[in-house]
Length: 238
Image (cartoon, rainbow, N blue to C red; front, top):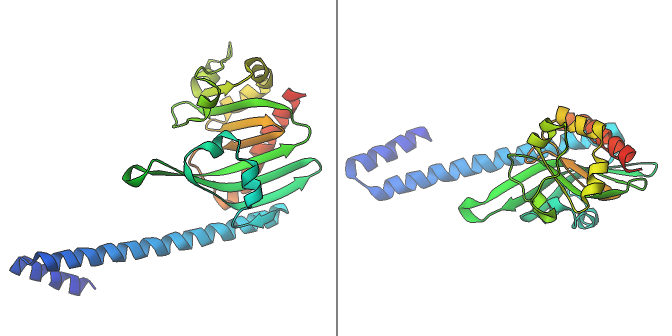
């Protein structure tokens, strides 16, 4: 391949044959694209296999293609209103008493054409009968996010918590209820565990880090963090 390519370049250089050079560049482009597609396919298969194994270890069900009914049930959540080309896949689902746990890969696209951006993240979602959350969104400052605009522009801040105020944008339709939810233990968690985006409404809670997919071996750690937040917010909301 290199020998042939060298001959093509030599011929193009000697004869000034732009067509030969063009064909050579097209061949290189096609080879790169094929290699990229093969690598991407192998990476996807490896991730699916790893998450399937993680689901088995946790005693969860696994749906590599996601679940359309579950995705539709999240349609009113702020994250799901962003962008286009939305795709929920690699769903791990478990139930414990009155709590439903769903861990999944979520992808969406913003912009279009050459200016489009693909966002991929691991998301953990809870639905618990005991939860009574006000509508709210929490996102790290300095990151691209439109979630907060759903509830107004001004962030909810807390006296004596400059670290939290400087790191996060917290917004909600019922400011007093959101303040009551974010007790000292909740604020401490987010100050000590930076980067989390969180949104809640009623008995549903979603957590994720924007544009970060968790490696399959770290799925159990993601679940542990999610359960910690769920416990803290449940204690605050009762």
